[in-house]
Image (cartoon, rainbow, N blue to C red; front, side):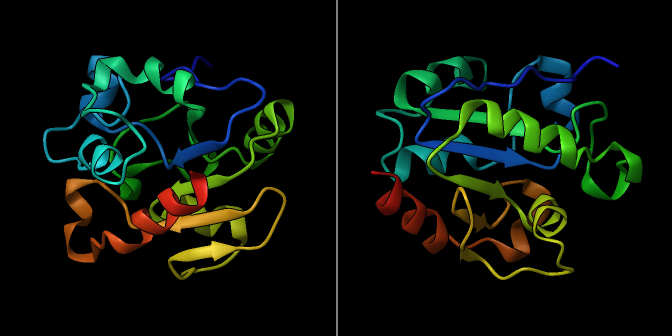
Amino acid sequence: MSHILPDLLRPGLRLVICGSAAGTVSAARGAYYAGPGNKFWDILHRIGLTPRRFRPEEYPLLLDLGIGLTDLCKTAFGPDATLPRDGYDLPGLRARLAAVAPRMLAFNGKAAAARWLGLKAPRFGWWEGAPPVMVLPSTSGLACRSWQEAPWFDLARRAA
């Protein structure tokens, strides 16, 4: 099965950000975090990980900044509640991360982080591991009730 969005990964990355799956708009546009209500590109710029606010189609530029992107579910798209249970590919993510060995892994939202950590509702913040894992509030417009900027700023301090 082909991937909805290609991985943005290579060896030597300081940070890989992993979401659950591509959203509907992202899948249609072929670009990460492309939904009009998604805060991803704004927060990356606000916390200083990008020199300006990138457009979703410019996502490949993140590699030059030592940042990679992937999703836990690569073969389906849409809101977390609609994703097929068997679409989450933990072994595939482990293999992709082992191949590139990033210094840090951050999950954009609790859904993918919960599967990775084997917990029902992980707290936002850092988790020990190899690599260290950061659980971040989702930037999705659908998750606006749980939005907090502070964990994103914490990520930026450690990723600097």
